[in-house]
Length: 157
Image 1 (cartoon, rainbow, N blue to C red):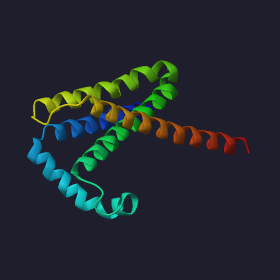
Image 2: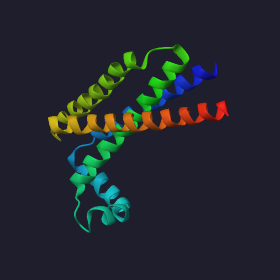
Image 3: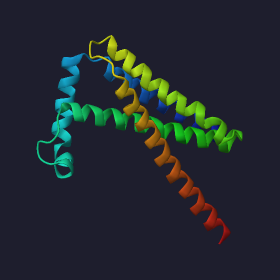
């Protein structure tokens, strides 16, 4: 029962993440620009030491936000893959293409939504979003595997 709950929770978190991403894409140019300006002011203290004072714009913040949103999606997909592997015995190699394709499809849907909000759609943005999926997936998978190795070594001692 516990493993079923965790799997359902992961699927729910993925749905929430996609809803957040796609609802942001439903904003028109003015609304999106306003949100980007507000976020820029909040993260200014973090960005300035990294990329310099006033070396960023709302556009950079939007691209970074998309990368992070899709990175979270990739991380959640990685956790779901590991969960399905551990609880259902499904091969990670079998699950990997399906889950990564899901991330690519989510990025394509996101850009398609933006066509209808007069924000335009760019293939480059699909690649940026999918890169976020891959990076989030890889980082989460690496951390998960490291934790599992540490747990197994402690059990052997």
